Every structure is written in C-alpha cells, then in structure tokens.
Length: 182
Image 1 (cartoon, rainbow, N blue to C red):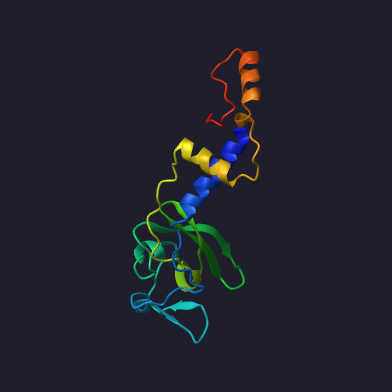
Image 2: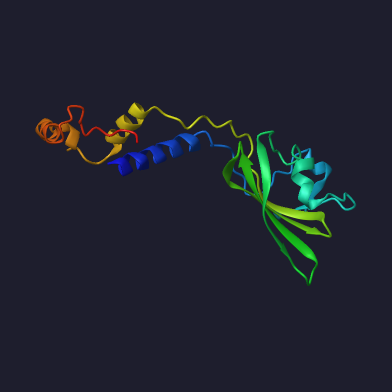
C-alpha cells in the first residue's frame, strides 16, 4: 500500500510540475531582432550562422547573449556533450535548456565551432515559460485524488469488519488500513 501511495504522489507531483510548462515549442531557433545582430539564417534551413568576424566564444555564447536567444533570467543552457572532428577541426557541442533548474523538454541546441569560435547552431529554445509552482501537495489531497483515479472500488479500509478484526488482533485501536505517509 505504501508503494502505491508513493507511486501516486510521484505522478501527482509530476503532473503539477509539468502543468505550467505549456510554452511555445519551436522547431528552429527564433531569429528575432536581437539575434539578427549576431546571426543570420541561410535560405530555408533551420540553421543559424553567426556573422563572420563576430568571434563569439562557443562555450560562453548563451551566457554572454541570453537575450538574443530569447532566454529569460530563469533559463540556462547547459553543456551536455562535446565532440570534436579531427578531420574538419569542427567541434559539436550539445546544450540542454533548463528553466528554474528543471530540464525543458524540447529545449536543446547543437552548436558548431572551430578553434572555440561559434560558427552555426541548430535546435530549439522554448520561450516565455512561467515560473514553476511548488510541487508540494497535502497528504490528504494526494490520498483523495489517488482513490478517485484508482480503478478499484473495494478498499480494505472500507471493510469495517476486517478493520475491527485487525485492530483486535494487533491490539491497536488506531489501525484503520487508511493510506498514510511514511
């Protein structure tokens, strides 16, 4: 029973945390007015190319230019992996978007650089995300919601005779079989 309650609490918290994240998901980085100062899009591709001679350090680009990429103060692009191609001299860095320390589904950018200077990027950044609400809910509310969504209708704590027998057997009048937090 404890495992079921923990499972239900987990899913309820997950739903509460995910609900506010209904931001606009874009398949390509938005080339807004600010980003046009440092990058341009070539034809109909989803790649953006950084303006020549801009000399933007690849590992610092999201720190030094968050507004250009549409990142809010609560957003962060974290470096997840780096791969270098010895033949071309290109470095590929994969960044993942976090909002208030929570990973953002669909928010990732692949950045290509050479000698540490950003050349081009492709990916998506989710913008205008609200501040997440606390995922803490009251125990009684969690149990009530769990009982409502569970497919069963015959719960042990509803059988008065079984509860009474258990109380007598355990010599514990407080025994109710009601779900409770550990």
